[in-house]
Length: 415
Image 1 (cartoon, rainbow, N blue to C red):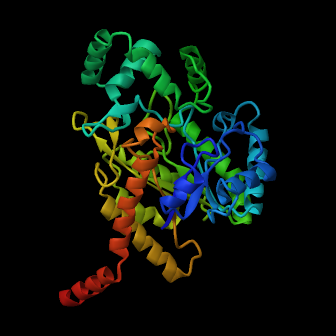
Image 2 (cartoon, helix red, strand yellow; image 1 turned 60 degrees about the vertical axis):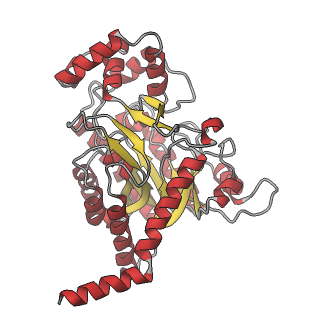
Image 3 (cartoon, rainbow, N blue to C red; image 1 turned 90 degrees about the horizontal axis):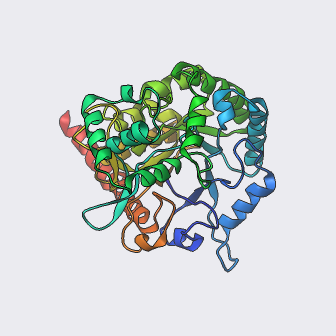
């Protein structure tokens, strides 16, 4: 695996020097300041490459921009409305400019409206740090009592409805603005302020779009852009829904292995691949991450390694969870990394060029000096560095020659 780090640009609270000190081998970034649907110019791409490639004193960092996360798919494309044909053309032009700049891996998502959803961005942990959390009861409070969405009562089981009613009645004055602020943070362009009326307006536009229609819109999008990516030698990889279950009545089409298989089969090209995010997919108990890696691994172009703890109170697909430490939580990270390394060994034996799959330690708990930095939610320096160090240890242990020697000996003794 190539160990990378997500960087939001010069305004990021983590500097290029600090990325180097964490020992990363490459950088994941995007041009977040450009509107969705617009063209990424060669000049803007090269400017970001230069920012990554140099320290503050102007000397070379030797870091490169290896993965785009993400080249956004506009809401117009997702809904096939308005200027979506122009946005498709712009998307292909941006792919051409990225290829000319030497960047080959492009991550994107097809989540309607909400790019990600958490109800708490600074949930306090017993050790004094904090993390992001999705509380299904809080979300039901937002949906039913604050947003007042039609049919919201139909979306939750009876125990959640009862708990949400009790929590709302006893919440005081702090919960409502906190939920509105945190959930709005997952809207595209979330640096802007969004009101409940804004959200209601956006939701209304999806009333007539079923999961089947959204999936077909995704297939239509890929049918347009994958041939371009294939001709340019690029690898597109779709990020899963976060969380991987329906919210606010919005359709979800990238939440399970079956969802990925439908898309990979419909547009069967090496350029159409997977971003395997162990945190997003791991929020559902029926997603077996090591097995998914074994079966989908040949089309996995990018890895997000993080862990979530699914709270035992809820046994439905839809449930509460929080961002756990990278080697804790409900995903067996050792087994997942073993499956990744097996896939890389297969690629090496096949003579593939993409042997080392880019990986980044996704999210992290805010610990130590992170608590003072006010970093992007989920992207602290020390919490992610701790996670990367732990993941690096597992990778090194499983890749060690002695480990391979022991495996051979154990196999021989079995016969």
